[in-house]
Length: 199
Ligand code: MN3
Image (cartoon, rainbow, N blue to C red; front, side):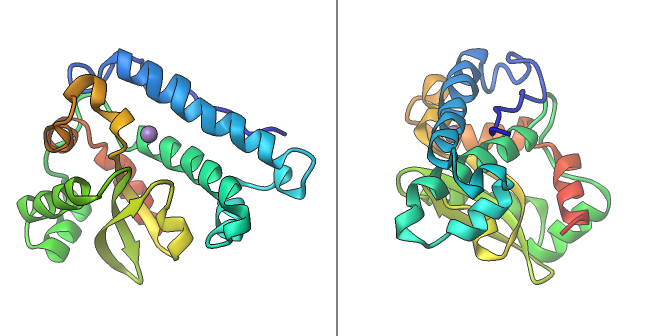
């Protein structure tokens, strides 16, 4: 069974005006799809073709001879995760148990935003900003290129794609404005809470 490009969890124009249909056309339809095509080409006729993305990512992490498989598998996983981290009318402070955990870990929602935005903005070049759970604690991290918390024994809770292809058509070079729009208008806290519950 070949890997497949999952459908977006909302209409292509649902995140406008923050992330436009034009961006999602390229980002989901071209970039994400290319990682799926590459992964299928790299794993066909190998035992990995029958494995899950998670299994492939864990088995190839840190193995330089498998960097191509790792990069494409991780990018397929990261992008699917990222689409689910957003929803129309999302963003702003979370509520309930998740709000309590964010406040306990970072002091306040505002402090969380400051740290998350800082991680996203200071990731040099391409990569991802993350909220993760590790050993029962919430942490903000950043990864370069395709790297992913799965490869580091962490549970991903929330991510923001900070590759230029994620924001250049809508925000040009203004990565801080894109991350702010993500936090204020797009974060799907229900998805984050689900991830935390299964961490
Ligand atoms: Mn991307």
